[in-house]
Length: 184
Image 1 (cartoon, rainbow, N blue to C red):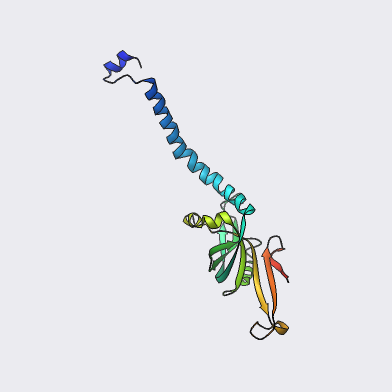
Image 2: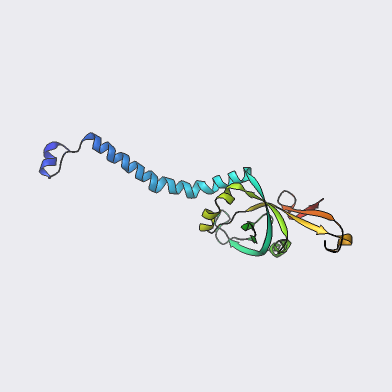
């Protein structure tokens, strides 16, 4: 706008510096209001998943309860696709176990996490560190691997009857799915 038009409109001519500053502020606002939230919701989950796969930590927890949870899709499976997961409430917090869990075997997998049993879980470090943020979005850290300590006495009797053999039951996708195998 030239100077004479600005004076007739009752305004003041704006300097080139002011125009550049206003454009800079507009770009910053665009970045803060659109680019950051979109990248947080689109790129954040993918980044957290890959970070968790590379940075696993082990937690030794006591199971308080386990239950089958039926889920509906929010992914490429399509609208109305159902799935299953096992929700675990432990002394270390709440977790979800999904490896090898289906609607048909979900109750059996949940029964493997007996109340009072001690389990060692491999969980992504990023999910544990950001647990509060995940719970805000109604998400739980996923268990990558679970190892249950099973104490058996003589002839398969419970530990308080006698014997000292300790077996470890491994549950993960790498060891044959949710059924897992026993390791000594």
